[in-house]
Length: 120
Length: 379
Image (cartoon, rainbow over all chains, first blue to last red; front, side, top):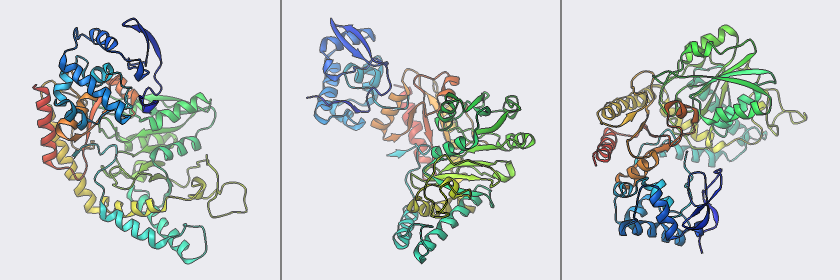
């Protein structure tokens, strides 16, 4: 079971918006992060990736997205930076370059993890 | 980890000062001002010593120190205690949310109006910009002494002179400058300031307060026990009790007193000189990195060791993640609770990367950061 919404500082104060993605009605926050971890699908991730300029999610992209999702499901929170590096086998600079929108808006968002609570 | 986020909180802390504070606290074991027995009297005496130590540190030898939870708490106390319906406040677009949010809430409640002075290309609020916003009904000027984003010190003395001429109290937020730059509130015509203990003063979180000219009438906005004048059902009119409802953080205050010694006299001057040398090295190094946008660059007098920048093709958030995960360098990213400043810089969505140095940083730390950034820019 995925962590309850509201954990990990997600979505605080950001407006909920519903869109049709990959034929599915999905809620997102104001920055395009999944409102509900369980509404994620591979098809939705692929369509969102295409919107960001990544026509095809390759093997390495899926390895990163799957790591994010598995880690989050198991630990109930997003991986720390060091976990991300170790778990994906990529430097974070490589990971940042792998997704057109980088780590937060790219990989993390496409993996369906909640919007991190940061100072912006 | 290389810690370059001292503007959020200083790290590491001076262990010996914390141990002295804890030892003293364990020995005193009484609530200051809450009893006539020796331990309570002694605790009160020590708290009063730290009050005087704090006031003197800021150049307010006969001013009053009232402790608070932090600078934000102290700023709220000052604002709520000084504004009246119909009054007008002048502040700046450099302010932290610790001032901006109270001001906006007070305006929403119909308790004040305000105007915010802009800053120039050097990250400085020009005194005339403040003077130009003053009105007959202006009853307060609030100034962030050092920008927590740009590291620029504001001309507090010049603005203080303008305020004194008009009989308007000037309140200074010294959250970032306390311990990082000299402050002389009496000489500058500052009626009150709000400070935090856990940044450049190296103290524990949960400490801070305000130092005010005792002639400044700050109405209490919280009420409760003070240990004195208990027969009265209204808050004591005397400072500091007027603004200190409830038991104060004795452990924090004692520890802060010990930490403050490291910022006084020659020890403090040496620390500031050390930080300034590192700032110069950092800024000069950053200026050599092609593609990096450094906001309002500068070093030397008029600066504290805080700089902000953006990297091309990488959000500040991701830059922070890469610096942490790949290089074990901790920096702050985002808006730094200064949304209007970032609006003016054109970074109001993602903010910037902020590097803030402290007295325990070294040239090696600066060089490690510069090498990491060069690697990130050159990929």
